[in-house]
Every structure is written in C-alpha cells, then in structure tokens.
Amino acid sequence: MGSRHRRGRGQALVEFAIALPVLAVLIAGVLEMGHGYAFAVATSDAARDAARYVAGKTSTTNGPGLAAMCSLVTSDLAAMTSSVSCPTQVNHAPPFVVGADYTKPAAGQAVVAVYCGTSVDCSGSITTLYQSEVDVYVYYGFSDLNILGGGITIQGSSRATTAW
Image (cartoon, rainbow, N blue to C red; front, side, top):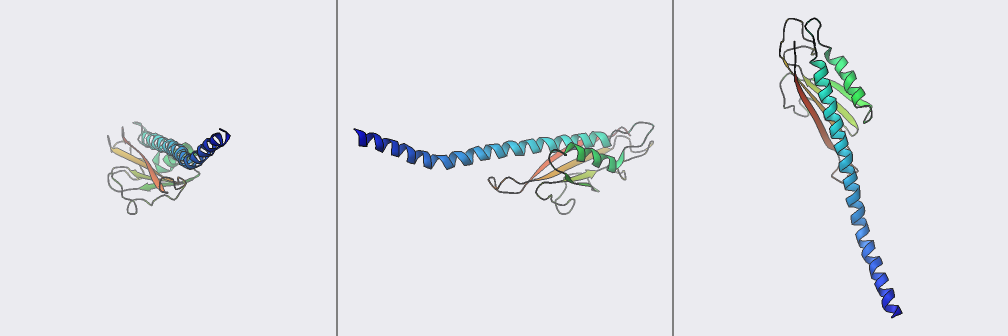
C-alpha cells in the first residue's frame, strides 16, 4: 500500500510540472492583455481630450493650436510614457498611413497625427472655418514581452467639429 501511495504522489507531481508552464504563460498573457487594454484606453482618452481642446475655439478667440494640444496629450500620457512625438499634421482626412503620414512609434513611444481641415496649425480664425473637422490620432508602440508577438501599435482616435 505504501508504494502505491508514493506512485500517486509522483504522478501528481509530474502532472503539476507539465501544467505549471502552461498556466504561467496563460496568466502572463492575461496580464499583458490587461496592460494593453489600459494603454488603449489611455491613448483613446488622450486623443479625445486633444480633439475637444483643439476644436474649442470661441467666437472671439482663435483656437489653441497644435503646440498647446501637444502639451495636453503629453500630460495625458505622462503615466504611460515620457516619449511623445507630436504633432504630425496630415493634409488629408483619415485614414492615415504609417510611413507616409506618420512614423511608426517605437516601443514605449507615442506619436500624434492631426488633421485640421483647411486650418493651418489648427488655430483657425475668428470668422472662417466654421464647423471644420478636426481628427486626432494617437499611436502607441506597445511592447508585450513577446507573448503576443512583440511590438503592437495601439491606436486611439477622436473627431471633433469646431465651433469656428
């Protein structure tokens, strides 16, 4: 009876040793997916804030422009990265093409691409460009420990219509 009990314990130990790496990879993958989702929410929030901000011109003042918008995006993404490359102003409406319209972000870097309609610098003017479209895209280079294949670009975007 004693050797049978020892064999059962040995079998359980072997099964555990086989299952442990699979469970570890599964748990790491779930954690990385959660991490990636948090970055996706942050990039989407930054794009939304930037689009609302740059479109927020009043009837008596010009819009804030791209430099001020870049400062807002940088502060929104401060918890994720300190490497924010912005803005790249694109001369056509989305979709934007990597390599042609903006540079692909490196791991841990954010790149911002903006379409301001016919406005230069998204500042508009008091009397023109009423109801113009502003598109802001934030791209983040996510490095995921190669569990899900390595460098993934996470994108957040938003469109706002100006009151100018």
